[in-house]
Length: 265
Image (cartoon, rainbow, N blue to C red; front, side, top):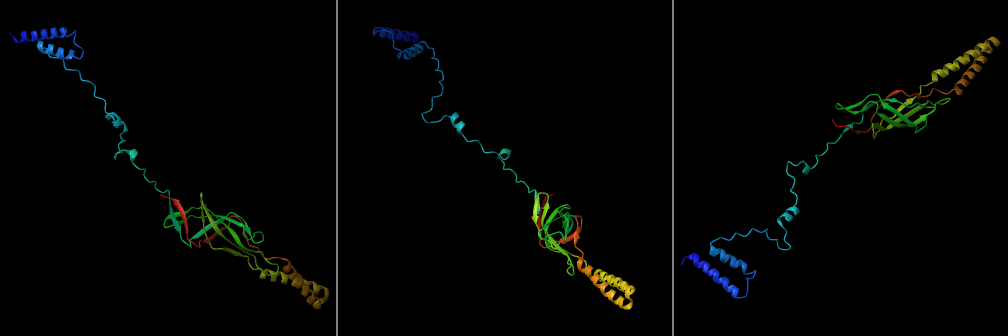
């Protein structure tokens, strides 16, 4: 008997045994019988289809979930977004104007010994720029502000008029600075020669009138009277006043160093 006949006989015997045991094979036995039948018939059973990957154990993240929660990679050297912002260069630099520097200014307010008072405001502008080591530290047109420090009106008999002031503030654009300058003082000219002339004219006029009226004696009396009249004019008249109108050009000096800020080049 050939091997094929033997296999067919085995299958028939197994089927008869199953029928004798009470019916069709259970679903659990079907795979085995089918496999035996396939083996007996020489037909290979098809390989089971590959199932989906088994679900991960509870509490263990999948690869995709881990990838979702992975941190973003650090920015590389070529990534501009990861670079710190470059420091901004300062827009200004400082220049120190030394003490003794001459300031050429022009008044923009009126001053007078017979109308100004102590602590009255004084304003002026720079007529020329201030240059330090080739750099323009203060431009022409910058504003300086100060105040009257002393003032004396002229007297009727004696006492010459005087006026003094100085500057304490400098304004360049939106920048304000404290500064100290020398006092600018002005003294009225003396009037002694003018007073003597007035007395002499009065005496001469009196002598002439006295001579016409009473001869030599009258001339002497007239001279004394005329001199007295001339002296009265001097006593009643004040001396010259100090007057500095707006537009007057002046110079002064810094008494302390001044630090200013200028635009960086």
